[in-house]
Length: 222
Image 1 (cartoon, rainbow, N blue to C red):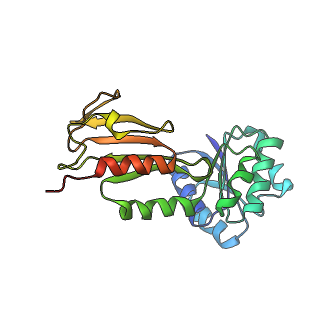
Image 2: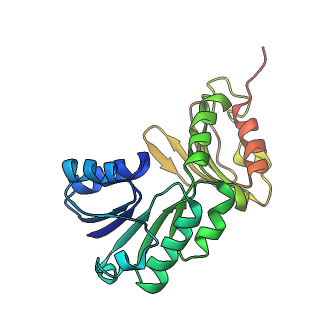
Image 3: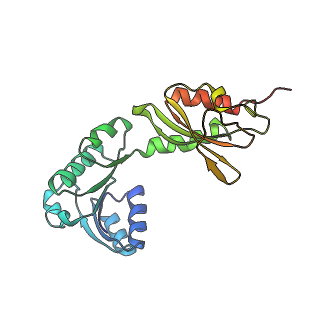
């Protein structure tokens, strides 16, 4: 694939190395001369020392033939402008952008970016997962949509064992989507009976998912 990467910081450099190793045709735009030299020494890419918002650079790199654009600087204003140029002026079909600040996610999406990732939010999720419980793993969370997906492991002495999905008393905005058991999976009905060590995939609003997860991880007090 033909790929443009704007920004070669900690995130961008790692992406560049990975994409280069996979044999993609890479063009990199980076303002820092030392980073440009590092890329030249360690990756197979056409390198342009400058800003990702510079139209003179854009007009010289055959951007209209590009398959994917990564916009990865830590400057959200520059990222917004670069996404807008790539998507609207050159019609790049797939744009992946970084949001340095969570509050700018929607603004970047408005440019037409297909995927917007905020590293600070992803890092928060990774660190909070172990804190919540060994039995609850957050797979996906979208704050602005009030949406969460988790996998919950039913404890061996769980109070829900032998009871049906219906007993969880889910709200209208929460669903048990899948139950993983003995190396297989099922799409459960409300009459499905839960067992210890079941791994249950739940999705819905943050509050309702937390409530359901709490019931699934409850244990019998003896």
